[in-house]
Amino acid sequence: MQKLRISVIGAGHLGKIHTKLWKSNENIELVGIYDIDPKVSAQIAREFSCKQFKSLDEVITNSDAVTIATPTSNHYRTARQMLEHKIHCFIEKPITSTYKEAQQLLLLAAEHKVLIQVGHVERFNPALIALNNEEISPIFIEVHRLSQFKPRATDVSVISDLMIHDIDIMLWLVRSQIKRIQANGVSVLTNTPDIANARIEFENGAVANLTASRISNSPMRKIRIFQINAYFSIDFANQSVDVFKIPDNNFDLTHYPLAINLGSILEAENPKNIIFYRPEVPQLNAIEEEQKSFIQSIIEKFPIAVPAQDAAEAVRIANIIERKVRKYEKGILKR
Image (cartoon, rainbow, N blue to C red; front, side, top):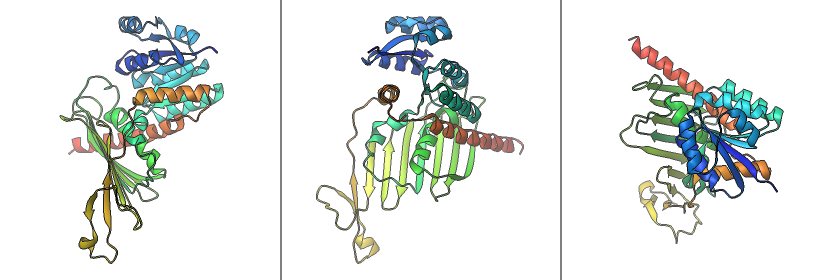
């Protein structure tokens, strides 16, 4: 059976990572790489012993599927061209700059019977995977995604660059319609918001508070999930998880350390215990795992792990937050 032919479009930071990992995957054939800067693509092509494409037409002729790791502003145009030629697309997040563009890609994929998977890589973060066996029903979510400033990815706001990860995770976990969004932020170093905060209320009563910054002194990628009788603290950067729970009265406490005994505090007839534990976190490369998932969806018809519909909804919410932040900024400047 002929191996699936995969090419990479975009030779920047993520494009190089994808090229390296595709090269190490024995189940596919890494054909080549394309970039608008031929010097950069030539260097990566030499490093990973693959073709250097001179045009997207060459990519189309030689590929069954592609990874699109170009700047976000080019995602729609590039993906559209691939989909129209029946080429499966793995598109780095966000899927597109606007919700309208994302919807158009959805229609094209359906029309040409090809797949789109989007690189919301935190869904594959080992720390989140470690909670697969937990029952998660968030009532309140607190997120901090802080990064030191880097010149790349400044073609979009911090909302589309960083907060988009947490918007996707939030929607994936809560599974309820959004009732209200409040947001503020400010453009400090670039022409788009560099720091932003959004408070999102859901119809089921859940609330999420998201903070993202690309001008922070100290990096942080943490999400805290609060629900009835449980609290989960996930550190995406260090790939660790802390779990605090109030178990059922008949729960065997033998193997769990007690964080605190609530009996004396509440003076309850039935004392409550809080157990604390750290689930085992699998040793996985998140980008490699999302690549494997993409291939399984194409070859073995597995459900798409991060479907374009989910990614489009994340962009829709990001666009709303961006508009509200812009409105907030204008209001401040008028004072």
